[in-house]
Length: 149
Image 1 (cartoon, rainbow, N blue to C red):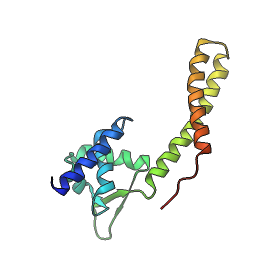
Image 2: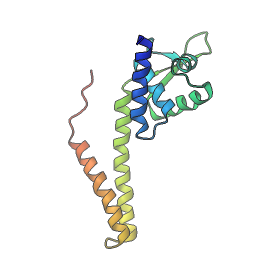
Image 3: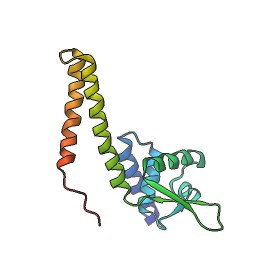
């Protein structure tokens, strides 16, 4: 198998993994490709050609990944082409954002319990969510810090 095919196969594995969490396959392919491609920065045209995605679908997925904190972009002096790359510490930034979301959802479940009362069917369902998110928050609170390379 040619090296390019191996790289694309790996990017596809990244895409299929992320699809389990609702990330669109094209966004996953873009992310996988930008994790492994050389050079590190790629234009939309280069990405489109590499992963076989239409420019239209690529544009919305590049916007999605940029908004999620995975990608950054820049132009070069004298050029109108935009070049994309993985954001520095992208994974740590995205995970920290998700951890902050856990605390935010704990606030929501607490408010829900106050709203419906402690001894209702609704409260039992809310308590299940609250307990799961409370457990995750404790795990992350007690986790050692991420070691940067």
